Length: 124
Image (cartoon, rainbow, N blue to C red; front, side):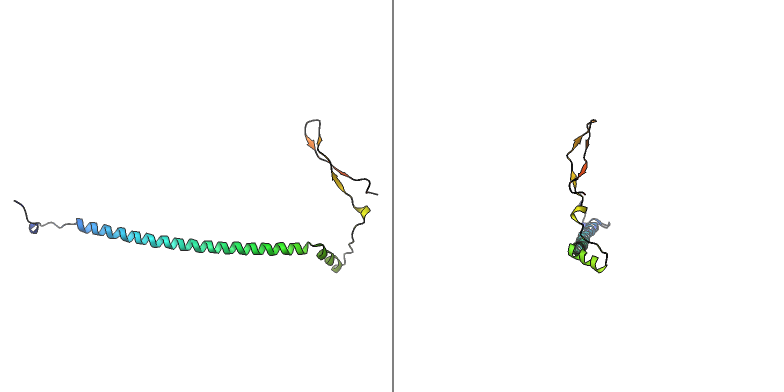
C-alpha cells in the first residue's frame, strides 16, 4: 500500500541544506568579488604612488645634473677662482705634458702590455 506524504513523520533536511549551500556560494562569490575589487583599487593606488615617486626622482636627478653642469662649467670655475683669490692661471704651453698611448706590445711570455710615452719635443 502506498503511503501518503501526510503520514510521513520525518523532517526533510535536503532542501534546507541545498538552499543554505546555494546562499553560501552566492555570498562567497559576492565577498570574493568585493575583495578582488578592493585589491585592484589598492594596487592601483600603489602603482600611482610609485609612478609619482619615480617622476619626482627624475625631476630631482635632472635638477642635480643641471646644477652639476653649471658648477663644472669653465666660466663658473673661473669666476669662483677670482672670488676666492686663489691666484690660479692658465698653464703655459711648455708646462703641459702630453701622454701618448703606445700600441700593444707583445711580451716574450705571450702577454700584452700597454705603455704611456710622453712627447719629449714639448717638454723643456
